[in-house]
Image (cartoon, rainbow, N blue to C red):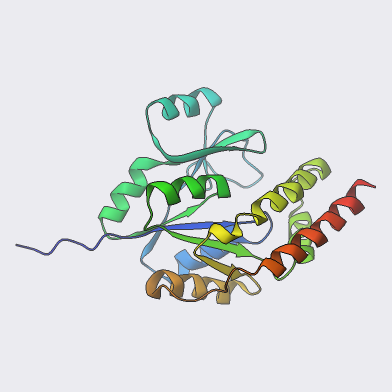
Length: 215
């Protein structure tokens, strides 16, 4: 009888807006052959250059809510006035085939996954400082001033959940960050420990940035 394939892992990638999560995931998929990306579903409109089925599945509120009723999501959450969710079938099928499935999702969804799938690997990506995060987010030039302020305020809430993740990785250089994430998944080691002082300084600096942008 042939040996069954070893199941793949569910790999959760979360982090503040602007830290480069998407770029890190793209590098991970490019450099390592045993990952697949779960494409999330959302009710928000596509940003310039985004493609349906590649960046997200862009659907209506009605379609999304029907899938909730049909238990079609691994997790789902409301964020910035829109729904986001992870379609269940793709993740289950690929982990059974031995592939590591990356879910790039928000904190709320990650906590749902952690409760349902305790073996999932939860990784929180951040920047060396809040000022660097703000610089990257503003530099994207994809959102209005008010939307950016909402993301800053959301980051303060997200910072409180850093302690709930298995690993924290600082994205200073994309290549190094991707290698570190792969080492965590493969060897269950790497990253940095949760540091309450880092969180305290991050929130303090972010409050100053918010004040500056609301004056």
